[in-house]
Image (cartoon, rainbow, N blue to C red; front, side, top):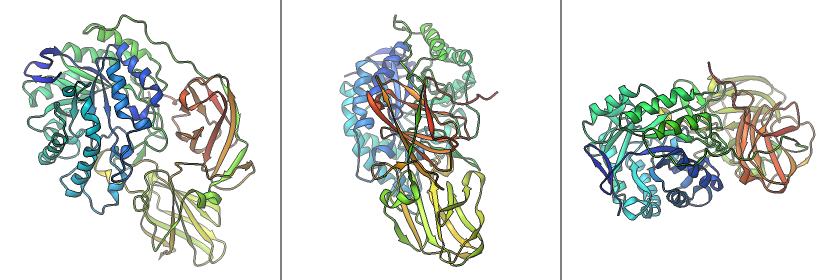
Length: 581
């Protein structure tokens, strides 16, 4: 069987020298009907390998409940990669970062008080053991030692940026081996973290976006022999709400790729194709201030969000051709796009009045977190009665992450974690008025010490300095909208769903623009496109062709505040906002 060998002078496969030229492609960020297209474009670029993370939180939404179907059909993705003649680098975590909700760690871990994530905490390692026991038997036939495309498996992910417990890494390596992983393991770290994140006997690789010579020198200092490899060569970056769109000059990135390849290094380009944080799956960062990531994971990659080749794709193909064979085929053409179309959303359904049909309330003295409710994504609707009328100050220990506050159904204000807001003043119209707080999970922190990121209302809650008890906590995951009853649109306060339909002769990729709308979520034919926010920079949501159908189609928008219009537009090009200087 083919076996990747880590020799003193580089990689060997079946005894022959191998330089890995790879690109990042996360199957869970791409519609499964588009996997084959993206993999074909990887081969046409001149890649011989693709790499992908595996998101534990999607595959195992509950302990003992493991999914490998639909958009999570990893074996099918690996089959398609093999059909293109591509090798695979598999990165199963358990932690993946990836600007993904919680770094891929399942939210149910956070229901454990005091659990230490990414550590030798027996509770964490037992959960990892269960995850690998479910995942790896399905992967085993795809390992190169079984004749499959998977050459190597990553051990953890940039662990040196988080901790330095070699015992933890050794425990993970033992679990991978115990569950049948018999291909080489590797670690990846930024240059300054190589010592902390490595494990003796496991190949170290480096992550970088520039300063190639210095990065490779740091790797060689920690690993005097063996292959030089950059596991993440960053050619763009991700965006956060409220900032500029990030881009990187194609010629500058291509020049650094040339430096890597000229040095004899193997490389994995991050990203070949970024894709999309569909639904509620984006992560966030918190380095003193919470910053949620946008829906698009375009990443200024070689293939844009719709999978079309960019100028950077062409520039990288020219560089790769100097160092390795590139298929003698033309550059892939852009996919067909929808003709621009305005769609009226002329029926609506209020969220607050429909909440009982979207989730069951739980009664408790104090608000329950999303994790205590067994909920991954979406919203929680909290409610209690106010004891007296008159001026009031509501104070909340921690808002995770954005709270819209209503009194007797009327909006009275918003508290945002991002702005470090904890208190709100308003007037209570009468004793016994109903206080309702709609809390949005805007994405769990995916990097650094803030991973233990519970969602909802946390800490003490007071009204005019006195504790406020006697709450209902209603999970609103919004994983199905079937219970909604729509009626012709009419002005209403508070969050509301708006729905309209349109007809197509032939499906094609498109982009949903929500000019005049404020903040919320959008679905097409029940498929969750993701979040929108007038804060920007992202101004359109990618609509994959496979979620559309010939004939009648339906758009649903949850607007959390208000809009100046009841019309949205389908467009033929994206708008990810102005780039930084």
